[in-house]
Image 1 (cartoon, rainbow, N blue to C red):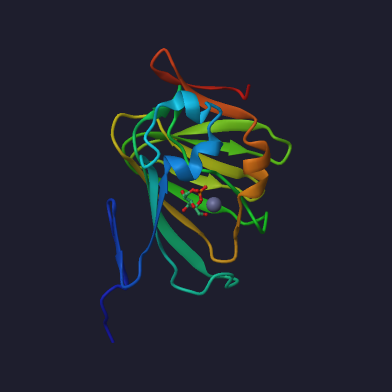
Image 2: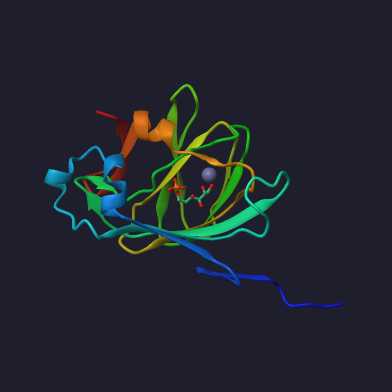
Length: 184
Ligand code: S6P
Ligand code: ZN
């Protein structure tokens, strides 16, 4: 038997019978930025990022995989680039693959001892995110930054640790270029 694929992933297009779509506006994620909302001068409905995902197996299926694409809009809040919330996986040892598709960005990584570093992302760049490492992405370019992700269906997301303590470094635009600096 020969059948058509159930998922099409072509550039920034992810197509399947059921694609889960999440939209994060500035109002949804304003707390991830150090710059206070009163100084930010950003419309609360401004889209910061969108995530489309396909879940071929139920959540928490051991051995299963999920696939998704994230589109981060261009812009800054103060001098902080638009970025994702960032998370550890709930099951800490679960790893993940990120893959740069369009535009340019940065993958910000932090271990459990709060050491933070970053990797440049661009079309064709591939990033193996080890277990026990928190991950967040930022758009450092002038156009939409899109990247793909593949992660274990049972990884889960721990957003609380990041929303409580943040990453130990933040990515800012300094003299027109990205710089990773200590969180003030
Ligand atoms: C899931 C994977 C991505 C992110 C997405 C948004 O494990 O890492 O699909 O969910 O990039 O980031 P966040 O931190 O808001 O989930
Ligand atoms: Zn993840």
